[in-house]
Amino acid sequence: MLAAAFALAYRARNAFELFSIPINPPRLEQYGPTLLLHVGTVLLVFYASRLYHLARSVSTLDQMRRILGATLLGAVLAYGLQGLLLDLLLNTTEYQVDYPRSMFFYVLMFSIVLVEFGRSLYRTLRAWVRRRGLDNETLLIIGAGDVAHDMSARIRADSGMGYNLIGVVARDRNGPSPATGVNVIGSFADIPQLIDSHGVEQVIIALPEAQREELEELINLCRRGQVDIKVYPDLFTWVEGDLNVDEMGGTPLLTVRDIALRGWKLSLKRAMDICVSFCGLVLLSPVLLLTALLVRLESTGPAFYIQERMGLDGQSFPMIKFRSMHADAERGGPGWTVRDDPRQTRLGRFLRRSNWDEIPQLINVLLGHMSLVGPRPERPVYVMRFRDQIPRYMERHREKSGMTGWAQVNGLRGDTSIAERTHFDLWYVENWSVWLDLRIILRTIWLILLRRDRAY
Image (cartoon, rainbow, N blue to C red; front, side, top):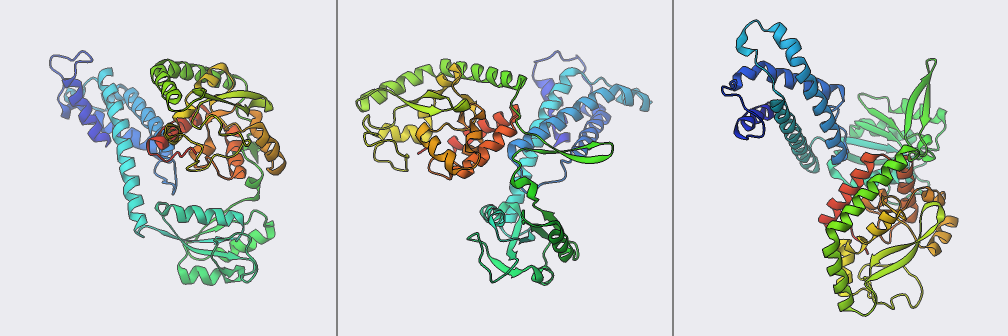
């Protein structure tokens, strides 16, 4: 892909008059050493960035960001080394050609596009092969609790990860399993026999409550052949943020990052909110006006529905939406919206399905009530109920509420588990970054286009 990008860059530079082109440009073959330098440098940067250590499950957007950064770094290094190395190593003037900035621009642009395309094509092909039972690793999970249940559910839901899960083992095979849906195939004493008989290639020890002595015993039981052993540690059950390895005088330490959104980051996030919401309201104003008129024409009542929600620091604010239900929909009191809710109007059903009813919240973002990305706000009546039922629920109010959030792009919308939503919201609060916000916004748009972001 890098070689093809270089060839396309050469053709594009001569075909499009975006930059000045010399009267007698060098032939493509004269750029041979430069091409080899570009390809070799970028490959070395990819290797140093561990881009050839392919993870079983990785976000497409994360992969695109890493490839973009590595390709950019490699191309810039190759451009800088062009004059330093080639002029010294090549004795003949036939291959001593300039590497102009216009050529570099085209090479960089085509390299990013083609490498991204090649990687995506490979990932698609690899997932297609794995769904047909090829290139799969036989997996055994040790533990029958909630962690083991979540892992096995995710593996069953995504066959493209490439795991052939044979089941889990528990302390007591005949004892009660706290998690439903887990296929218990043996006890700890059966681990060596199960590894040998099923040809297990990978073992995951999902026992966050296990003591050190028990973990050592289990690891020793798994040391057979070329088995890859992974451990789900107890630390992650109560730490929601990232763990970074640091050291002090040669002693390794784990640094737990807590609240990520502080200081200048708050100003940066607010600047993004203002710019995007202002531009969005200006550009979408004709369509917003038309929607408001259609809402008024279909049923009596206001075009907008203003509802009290609880946001930053537990403060209430009026959240604005297009009205998607009849004006008297809550005459019996507040209640959850469900699929095919009879209170919805015909236009309202489309607005909710397409999430267009949420767009007026750009006004809330511009006024500072909300952010583009953050935990979704709830009504005060529900917040008072959830804070007594869900551990750490109120900690999600340490940041502004958002039009979309990490929980929503992971499928937790509408009538879904509040505990799971809280877990995702807390992870977002403690791991905020500009890239994470952009990733959530792009995933939200993509899910809406695929009609998978069901708002009901």
